[in-house]
Length: 141
Image (cartoon, rainbow, N blue to C red):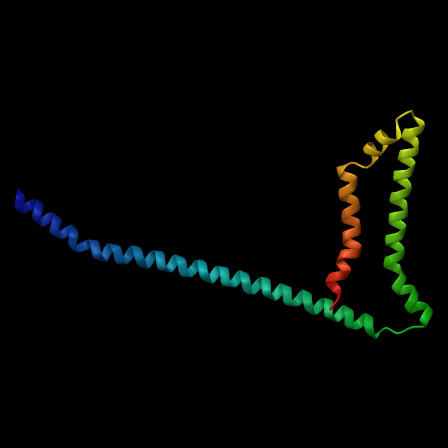
């Protein structure tokens, strides 16, 4: 009986290194496959980024080649500031109108200010100003 158990242990223990090699090979191949997939995704992302950069550069190149009269050039340069000032004026008008309406309804000035200038309005205001004025800092070279 002891010789039978010894023989069985010898048979199975001789197969352990081969099984470990097969398991290690399987894990190595799975790891290599995961690395290849990650590299393919990175390459695809890099290709998309490069294409986007080339598109922006071509648009800028196209726009810089367009020459018109001084009036047309100045008008083109004023579009973004005019839109920003218009939206700020509209936003301010809405806030002032809400304040006046609340004060006319009998709400105190301090309470009316708290109602119209809450966290959401402050976040919106900060977002708009940061978008317009902060974005310009990133574009400077």
